[in-house]
Figure (cartoon, rainbow, N blue to C red):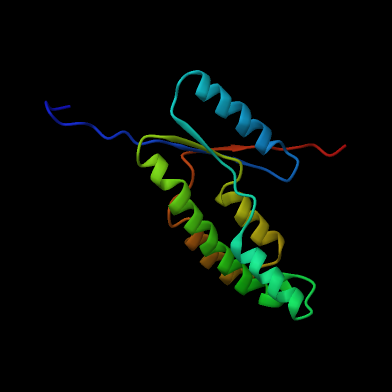
Length: 150
């Protein structure tokens, strides 16, 4: 480092991936507490509500559809949700990591992409959605959680 010049530290984004009930939120909380106890500048980020999903559900209900997905159509819904996820990443995660703060999130782009595949999105649209959600990059560290069905 040269004299009189301050180095800008880059933070990291640690994300958990897994099915519902795998323990993502629990592990995020434990890791967050571990970082905070060591005085590491850390932020928790947990997204539980999506604007596109809520609006499409409300509109669909008004028009007699059982879900927002059926109202918008699978492919349109997946693309819209992809942009929603990218916006949240760029507005809620990137500003912290760009200022040297560690962000720990309970869901990542990979959870979202797995959900898109599970909903039967066409391969062409899936590739488009993947390009959109990965535009801001993937987490620095991704921790995959798995559960064994018994």
